[in-house]
Length: 402
Ligand code: GDP
Ligand code: MN
Image 1 (cartoon, rainbow, N blue to C red):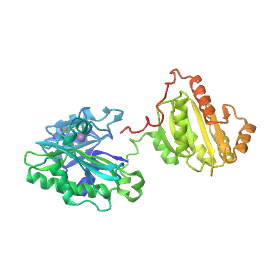
Image 2 (cartoon, helix red, strand yellow):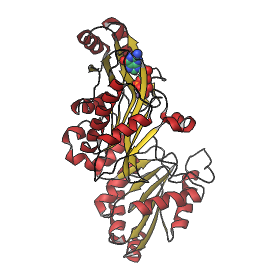
Image 3 (tube, rainbow, N blue to C red):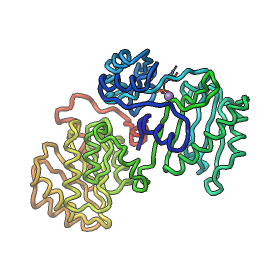
Image 4 (cartoon, rainbow, N blue to C red):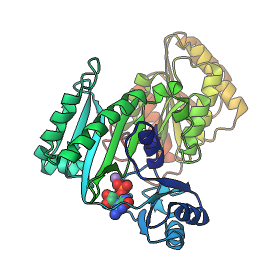
């Protein structure tokens, strides 16, 4: 789960990492009041779950409360790479002498948390890593031994921070950030920029904070930070139904039981020249209600032209799935053709059930490849004007948007 800047900063503040005083506002009038309370110059910052807000015009300096109201008016409602701004964070403006970068994340290769620190902050860290790799100090922390201050000192020296007062403040921030990262079950805590003011004070000016979804049950306070309104409505609906659903950009709806089979199905559809509209995993159960829920999710996606239902019966029995499909068809009208491939436990029984009921628009195929071909063919014949991309992106091209 990704946190907004203001939420990440709230966690930073709780762990003693210095941040500026600020207020949240959802209207220009609220922004004005917030700026009045803070006094003097403020920064009006778009709260969206995407980086590079500054470049996109989502961060503006305001001279006074009236100006803050105007700046908030300009920023609220703005679309920053597909994210509409619904909230602004009004923060006491900082004077900046230097911009550093500090983060802690997981290095999956080393299976250890990794700190990164550079004095070349404020800009894209990927650019620093690519053009000036030596400027980026890196430090792994053994999670069992925990963080030790000597490691923080090493990181700070390696980054070339020489001012003794800065070193002292940085050391405290690095230690607190590690504590914050571990105690919050975070996957990423990033501060860019971590500024030094002309008076020599070090402070976090931005926050990018990702918490492990699987640990949210331990953090009721963080879990309730989730912004239900900002979430993709379909993904939110899927979560509510307990269906794993990822939106992709094609037109063949994919439904499988188990993540592995669903991913293979996505790949096979791409392999035969089709474009998956989504990745949908029914989970291991696949009882009738589960099928109904998943079909309900998939059919809400306006891009779907055909549905490929790929079931391998293991613990899931194919006859149960077949009944689920029929039940779903009774409960709801599905306009799209459905291709079903049933294999594994009770597959013959399952296919027999489908054949006997013979619902219109339902095609049973014996193999995954045949099923994929059929679904792709049906998707392109049902009112899709775009020809399928050859090759296909497969599943790998789908994730990692942020
Ligand atoms: P991002 O563009 O989404 O990463 O948003 P940031 O919060 O990092 O802000 C972008 C840039 O705006 C920063 O790198 C700063 O240069 C500038 N900025 C943000 N807050 C302040 C502030 O309080 N004072 C000044 N002078 N500049 C700020
Ligand atoms: Mn930033």
